[in-house]
Image (tube, rainbow over all chains, first blue to last red; front, side, top):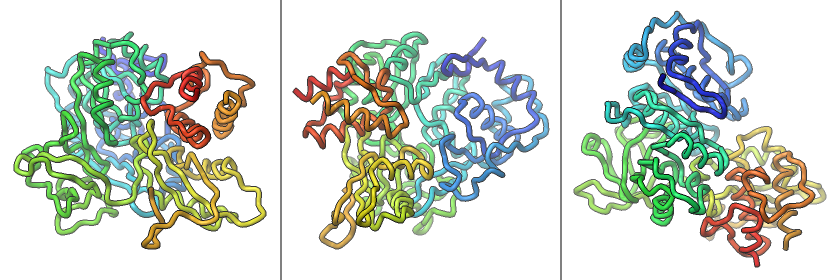
Length: 405
Length: 73
């Protein structure tokens, strides 16, 4: 019996998965659930049935994304029964699928933007062979985001076992790693920072991957004390393009297979359109998409580079990208608020923490908590400023532009 | 100092609709007993830094209430 997923106290085998696929008569184009098994099952159903699917977070509010409402969310749609008799059949159908898989990215203006991928663009970096048999993955990402999808497909397509350790307590994560001899973990630097301090070593882990935000040598070294047998790598993946580059340390290498599709202009990384999903929100210069990531060459001939910063204003909060303009416009919906600026402040846990400065009308009883309660109804948790400061004048830069710290 | 830490913790718990704690103990774990997520812990570090001028998580060694007290001594 090969197991597919351990989630809390429930275990699902690949046999169960196969039976659930065989018995299916419908799927959900917009499924909002925090049940990881149902979420993955629904995703695979859509892919095999060549149906479009939109991946949404279970805590999303309807008005955060255009087109989401009670008529779409968790409403099932019929599909013709899927004829598969083995897991190999499932894999074969998946590889032939032309299904459109939509995920969302924090656009630089307004609401999150939809990016349409196919199985092929999502799994460009997935490797399948016997070499990858018997891997046991700690699943530590949000499953609707690019990094989570990468881990899912890498594990699923090799019939590996996944263990849900996303948003679990440190104790429980260590217990799971130890009890089930986890071999692979891919997560954000924030996830690894929360495993500190180093108290004990876990020898089963063979590889740990960092992604989603900038990591540093110090954190790598501490992780090697916890996981002495692990090799460390970094991955650069984006909602727009899927995973593109890998690195053993902070220097990323452009793989030769895509070297003619990557350009650097004014230090900004440009990605050829053939590597991207489809979206109305992309702006191209010629055939190239501006990633907003600023880099520095280590060795241009070899394609070796390092990330420096971001050109646009998205703020990376523990691997979640927040568009400050979107948050500001929601805060301004409160009639008592006159002006607002949302910014990131450096933080030793999340990399950045989201903060806001507000100017309010005189004589009202707004508090930090009342603003946050208002935002809770409108925005996902990671988009809500954790520190709201009442000021008389906003911090303004010398150019007169609102300052983002 | 300990009273102020409890105040800050209860403030963050309130924002999550969790009941206020009457008291906290040095052995309480921030994730388990206090029920803080990574975002709550980040907020805790910011609020403690605003109050005491110390980044308690700078070297990543804080998992319990007692360890916060140590940093603030």
